[in-house]
Image 1: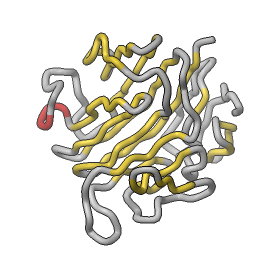
Image 2: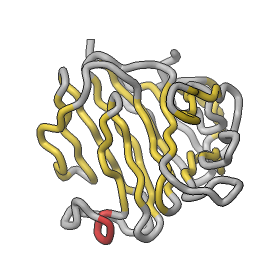
Image 3: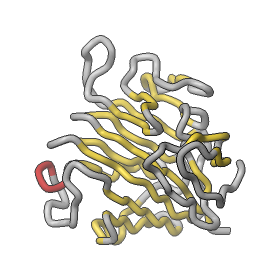
Length: 200
């Protein structure tokens, strides 16, 4: 995995966690020191799809899952409410790598009205939604219809979770082993700037 510390503007190529990413014209994001990207902005390399219990779909070099519930669009991972056949339900996208030590995970999400998704920390789900309308953290500072920052710091089997700098879960119990996952459930959800810093 390659560490990236460069910046990007329109037309500039930078090396991120799983390969080369072309940054969007309006995205001048700088990857913080010590962090690596879990999403290259181009495809789903480094992730796999939970098709059903015990069955995983490899996604190396692919821009979407076979049922189109997750797609890479304009440098974002987009989670959709229904698949190509119009079927809904919960579907999960996971990193191929496990993160079994201490780490800090950061990402941004944008939720459609009343949209319901989640971020999995080694299999335990943190509810990530249009919080003001869908809860459960209705009073957290929230950018409705815009990007929101999520930060999850894991030490051992306990996580502290923040949305836009406000703590939403102080002692969130998580398993000792597992990967990082994203959920597709209700409404349209978008993710970007997914990065992690592992603590030695």
